[in-house]
Length: 360
Image (cartoon, rainbow, N blue to C red; front, side):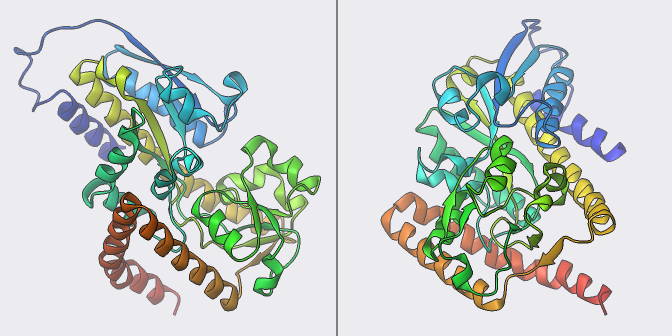
């Protein structure tokens, strides 16, 4: 808690544009700015929805009440996958969703959530903040009158719930699966039939056979959704090693805010994103322990090497095709590849070596 308070204080001072000694040069402004935020999630959705509430609380507290964030869940706006359009049009000032949902609007948006066989959460955060990721994301979103800021990471996601065991790549061919983003394109390349379905419709779709399998998040959220009642095979992940949600900002509205409130808004988003990440890690560990105890019939599986090899081959081919077809995509893909090579070498000698030593 002490570390978090120090971080809040430091970010607040930075947001105010100085070291705390500029009170004599700052003009007092008591205007209250109310911003409307639309989120993809249902009302009171755990962890994801907690992140937006924490953001609103921090923004209000850090601005001494000058920023008031009004949150509308999908229950009110009725468009869980319409956040991009609503924020772009100015119907909402802010949004909370995931960047890879917008590949139909702009294919270059999907690279900023997570990538199959890509960076871990810590590696990806470093890329965003120091490795050029935020600048590339700014470039992609600016032409839509938007800005995207990290909105909370789930960590490594599980590979999904399957009604049948996957023994070879043939078992994926014709499989109807809810899986968004670049991973959905990879699955399509190996013969699966990917689709994207909002959270509130997933259980019914699986139960009624609209889909044969789905990936959602991991133990932090999956158990409460009840997927294990229909699909007993729970596969480990490959497709979303660091799923980062996003806060979307309408730039026209953002530009009307005083500079100090702009900085406070961004700081509150990043603090809420951090809180969501650690909340996800805690909930996953807790629910994993509960799952092993309360639901022993869930069969935790890992895809065979032959399946991983086919998926990786399809992933590499798609990356090459996208890079050749789009110069912006090429720069994003190359940036991620270059940074991953550097970061992974350190991850292997630090975290992985440590974990390996604990397993002996």
